[in-house]
Amino acid sequence: MKYIGTITAMLALFISASVSAQESQEKEQDKLSYYEQRAKEDAVYEQSLATKNEEDEKDFWKDQKRYEKDLRKRDKEAYRAYMKGKQDAYAEHAQHCDDHCHHSREYYGHAHFYYTYYDYQYPRRTYVGTGVRVSSPRVGISIF
Image (cartoon, rainbow, N blue to C red; front, side):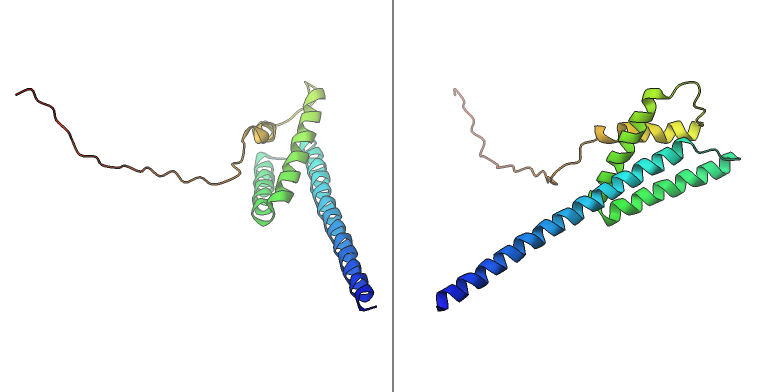
């Protein structure tokens, strides 16, 4: 009888742990999809941005870069999801963007960053290179 109670308790713990792990994975996935969706909405806003003067536009892009930098410091996975969403949205817009789209010089400067974002491969590890030198005695050969 004692073994049945122990087995039942262990089974209950195992099931609760697996359910908890699934919930945390779903929350993580929801968070990443939220940031991808947010990035697409931001990209649509950026593509339709019409400011009255150049100063306002520069301030907007500065704030946008600050947001991305803060997100990168806070949560790298969310930042990657956000940038993937931005890249997808900008690539989709580029397919039909031509003369009828009147984007500013600032826009094209920042859009270039989103197109080339994934060209950079983040290193998976930090490598430290060290050189090891072993000194050996000099041997000379002479005939005389």
